[in-house]
Amino acid sequence: MPSYQSSIMTRRDFVRTSAAFAFSGTLFPVGRFLQQQAPVQTEFKELRQGIGYFTGRGGTIGWLVHPDALVVIDTQFPETAAMCLEGLGKRSGRNVDLLINSHHHGDHTAGNGVFRPKAQRILAHENVPVLQKAAAERSSRPAPQTYADTTYAKEWMGSFGDEVVKLRYWGAAHTGGDSVIHFEKANVVHTGDLVFNYVAPVIDTQGGASTENWIVVLEKMHKEFSDETIFIFGHGSAAKGITGTRGDVLAMRDYLSSLFSYVQEGVKQGKTADELAAIDKLPKFEAYSEGNLVERFRGGIRQTYSQLTKTQ
Ligand SMILES: [Zn+2]
Image (cartoon, rainbow, N blue to C red; front, top):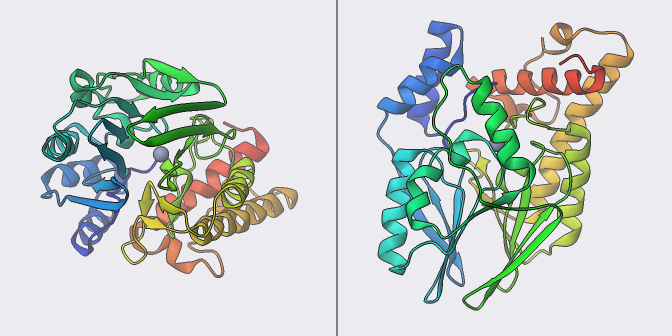
């Protein structure tokens, strides 16, 4: 599986990882090495009614800062988790009442250990600890894991300050444990990695992904929320960023539909995964696989192929 880039890839990151890829032939190890070397740029931004995001390295962190509550979604990696925790401490002066993991991937959960001593509980869909453990056991570089201590199956709801936080699980999509997290009063949604905003997404079939149902989940998401809803996305392009509207959710649906149709048609014609992954872009979605994103794009084709042919 390709490595994750920061939520918003800078030009410098782009050049570095491209060069690393050309040099090594594999993006993952050298990309990670360079990520560790590159200085981290972080940003805290409030969006509405005490709810905002933090970007550093890895999936976008969401937060709610209220005089009576501190809620955090996702934890990136240990280094940026510490920066985020410090910044939130200054803003709220509280420990974390609720930490949510949107799904199990390392760029959203590797900082859990940093948050753990300050977090009353860690909440995730019930598949998340299982998938997280399995992924850690498969890893060639296993790291200590900190797991959610509270889980739910379909829906979870809680009050924090004057806000209501609602989690929903709509079935396999990016992984087998993706939560849609809604701050109901402020009408802000954290999508986790259900939306990669205008960039090719990681599709993790071994982690329970279903490209076909992901399309259904995004349609549900569009229907459930309104034009006033502010969305925080797990990842996004430098041009489009990591926040947006339900129109952006539909754009993600359109990309996945195009990818799914392409692979489905190829399977019908008896093509191999190698043959299907020989392209470097889909018509109308050229920007999604630009530069070093092409390997992640091709990975998405292979992952979808394996879902349709059960070859994994
Ligand atoms: Zn992910």
